[in-house]
Length: 325
Image (cartoon, rainbow, N blue to C red; front, side):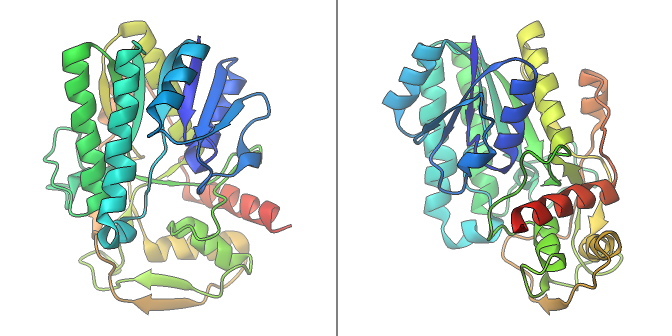
């Protein structure tokens, strides 16, 4: 049996592909390379350049490789961009995912892992946010992901496909072995951007909004190291294969750091002062988003390995320096 990783040449997907190869799994990566990087895919994985919306292509891959699980990362992920280009986000994140899920149902793929987002909560009704809290997303990005959650749940009820829905908080850092990392030059993630400034690849760090109702006025986020996130996926896959029970999980550490705290950490770790500009809030941004992670502990027995902001920043900086060379 094999595993199909959509978006497996991208940031999180490539980390997942490396982990699966390390585990001895047969890995098929499907990526249209619009943002993914071919070189970040492990050599022993098969890379197929194509789109998840191509039902014939996906069906062929599923049948040819006897796919046991699909781990779905492909999609668009920039919240402010989704406000400007909502139809693109509903096409890429919802319509294409519906096609992918239908192919899996028709070909009896038993397990489906979906990368969702904390953006489905909108402005959380409490901090930390729990999986059973209200989902009232405030951006097309969050709504496009929530719609896909609904599609997957309904498909599971009707057709028996087992799912793991993983709601990511803020993913950062890079593979400690230096095999892959966040490689998109125009990435908007805070730690990536701050590391670009620290390594001289960007002139300044823009802080979007310093008037939030948070301790220092800047947005607070729950950052999780990408390798810990991949570890959660591994455990969810084992859970689905072993128990056959679908699962919905927050993926974070349960504590938040402000934008200014992140910037200060990057300065300390890098030894560089970051020029900072203050700009207006961006559409769709929220004051504070932190995960309740009790399900991770209680159901999966998961404990993080890299739950330290300095470690996250150090691995991100190491990757930035590597791709700078």
